[in-house]
Amino acid sequence: MYGTVMLGKTHASMDQLLALTREWAEAKGRKAGYVDQRILHCADGRIAVAVRFESKESYLKLADDPNQDSWWTQTMRPLLDEDPTWVDGEWFEA
Image (cartoon, rainbow, N blue to C red; front, side, top):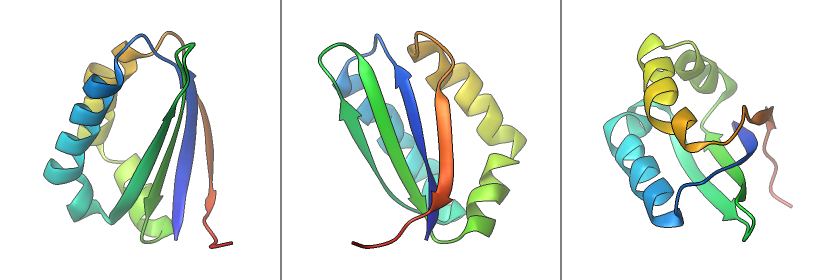
């Protein structure tokens, strides 16, 4: 399994973040090899979003999709206070 962790800070509510990510999962994610995600939302607005995909190939294909870039730029990025940090890699069960 492969995926990413996004670290950032948001002014959005958890309800807003969950609604948007659930909409994305249903509309795009399930077809793109998306497996699941978790959001850690701290009281000060910091967030860590962990997203897993079936494979590195499915993750990179989605990352290179212009429609995904448009969704990110127009829908999710405006909810962040600054550009996030991304950490990509292979997931292992502990």
